[in-house]
Amino acid sequence: MGKCDGLSMELHIAQNETRNVSAELFKSKNAYEESVLQLDEVRGKTRTLSIEIKDIMDSITEGGKSIHEIDKICKKIEAEKLELEAALSEAEGAIEQEETKSFVLLMNLPS
Image (cartoon, rainbow, N blue to C red; front, side, top):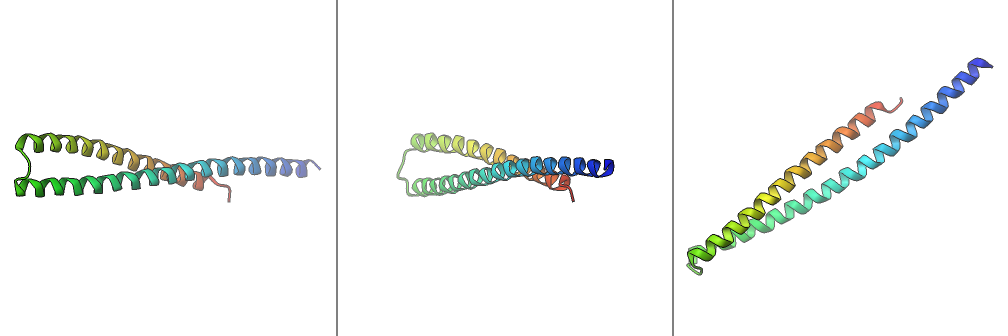
């Protein structure tokens, strides 16, 4: 009966570990999906800013704005671009971390 109890205990421990790893995997998956959504949002904003920059450059070509106004707008857009690039980099880093976590968790799942 001792061997059976030992195997039963091992089974119980393995099941607990599996539940814990599954819960952690679920959390990592949700964090990954949230990071992907944030990345998509940042990319959308970057596209919007690129269009705005193109429109501003067209306005410069047409001579529709004064140099001072254009300089102010370009500085504002450049600052926003830097913020978005930082956010994009952060989101990509978060995605990489979540992918690594998911991989480690998957590798640690009992066979």
